[in-house]
Length: 308
Image (cartoon, rainbow, N blue to C red; front, side, top):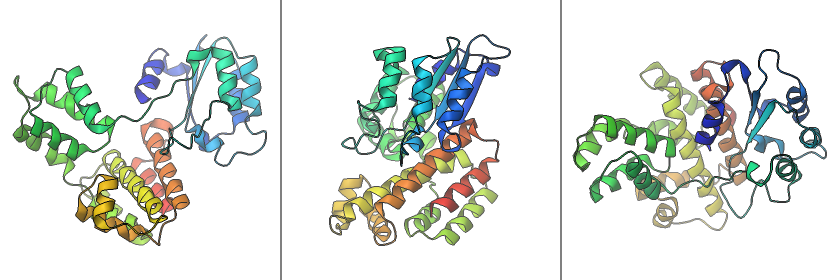
């Protein structure tokens, strides 16, 4: 999804781009902005990230201005609406009969709505390795996917690094350990434990300690987001009865030791609170990618404080 958005953005000059965050922008303001004619560019792109915020919860008539605009859109304006896919495919955020989707399809044709499923880490890593021309020993690929989990951006970045600096032959475990593990085995465990226990004061303290060192916000945030997703899945499973450590490890795809620590989330998190925290992490991700002028460390600190 991010690649598709970047390819589209690459077709427009910087002064023809408008980048908005749905959680901070009303649909009516988006419609008015799109209807305005650009001052210095004949064609322009308006990007609205995280439009899930417009429908959770949805207020009656809130999307009407955007739907009305799409009935008669400005010919020189491209409107890109980006929604995160739901974690549970049985509960789609954007069903096919949604009025906004129907308006987009009517205005731009059937291909104007693109859906991207989150890739499975192992299959995606093999696909990306083939794309960049890398061959892996089976053991090396298993270690690689174990280190990176289900973070597609990190998988692609590390494979491109291996392709650039690695040897001509197959990638072995030693090379993965040397070039990948050094960065990804140092997860901020103390911070993640505080998040599991919903200890706001402890989490802010650990985050401050990390930021005072060599930690970078855009490296810490994906680890936090992944962990909050594990918290959400843990408490959802807990609604059906407290799982054993081994059963939880199998469901989450983590080591039993880590699954045992995840059990501390039960009783202090609700599924709704965990889902809101996950949405807040996605908002912070958009902010770190240019949707906010706030210092990155402050973006991360606010996201943590407002999630716990």
